[in-house]
Length: 597
Image (cartoon, rainbow, N blue to C red; front, side):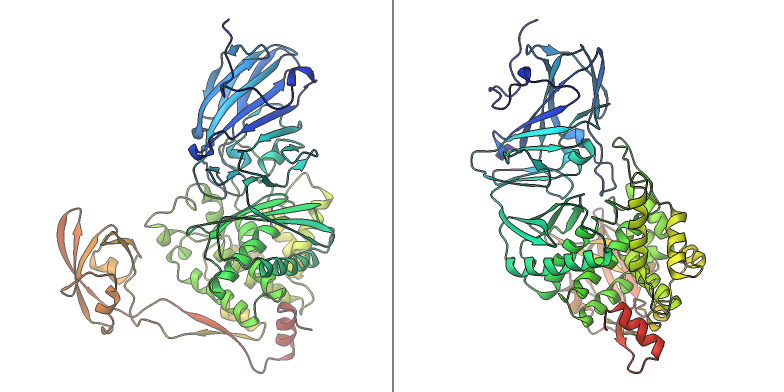
């Protein structure tokens, strides 16, 4: 057979794999020759232990982001060679699997390229400035070898000199290893020239890798992170689950989100997201959220979320108890650590309540349904999603607030949701190989609260019965104040200015716009005889309830006229205030929740 040279057309600068024993160990070489083209070149090396058919595969999704993402679509070429560098034929057996026949005791090289040009916390991005690699989107592995050690050797671009990853180093920072494939998938890698800050909390080493230009107040962020981490550890009341933790904080344009990992997290925020108090608190809350996932999902977890099937959906009805509970605690830790005031925290609680009750889909989709359908709905939002779906993050936080206050009340301030978290972690420590079931989660809540909670779960978690948030807040001597509607009427539309064309991108069911017959994707040309402009609200500023408004639109190129009647604004806006003279029980619950005394 004709000898075929390396796919990458240069000599391997790493270990000579022909001279060392490789038995059920997977090694990867990563090359960044032309990062401006968004490629990483990868060489996977392994040795077989017997004659057999080998199946290679790449995950279709990544844990923590519940959508099939088809990572194999970014593989641009794949070749297999034996130790003599002869090309070996293979068969692609499915969208993300390949197979070939291997001889016993032989070494094989799988060489492939991955295109990396999607900026998100769950995908890969490589350019002239840096490389962010997520394991599921990067590493092909071998069926049957998942529990073996996976080593990686990185040849960085000549202008890069830093690497941030929770993967252990062998002494050379460019050589890392994972104890198994799950750890490799769960360990993102940032390579470039990021600013790296090291700090310790409770004798645990932490790294903050800051990527991209921004106006981040670095010293304040680090100081606040230390305070928040201390509170998270205080709540857990157990030794830290890892020896080292890495925050990867990437600054980009108009992106906000994070993805948790067992010993690290990837976080993306707008580069100027520190300009206002509200935006700063959003960033620090995001970091607190992903850090608390160290326990909630990366250790104790719903039974369906591990061990993972990387080929297809891993359905669970309990994402609300992962993301929703975490969304309650992220802001709570920011408050408890003293990073925000009590008023700022109660404003956030009120915002979660307002968002939930003003979402039309809250009446149609339960938290458990939202969790189960995340794979096909949460990450696939369209113009009708607000009418039919509920956000298990935001409503999960609001429900967790009510559940916490209920437990505090039933135990007269002796127990809270904090104790549920500790009980779940204790259960995990007893049996780390298995997660908890829905029934076990409910049972632990009932045991901690010394009360029956089946009706609460049936109505508000498994069902869509509205929660009386005012009642639960009153248990802690707090009042839910309904503010005056502004404006007095509500059109129920969302408009986007697309290059000077004003497009209706969302219309709420039962709103004035829907009743008038307006459709999503209509282009609004005029309101009451005035040409549509960017400050279109001025046309309606002097209108009153029951006034009639004429709207002219272009619908697929056809001009249409509509008339709508302005009706009372049904949207609710609440704030939370402390009752001036709470009774003794209310005061005790308030102080236990808000950590006074």
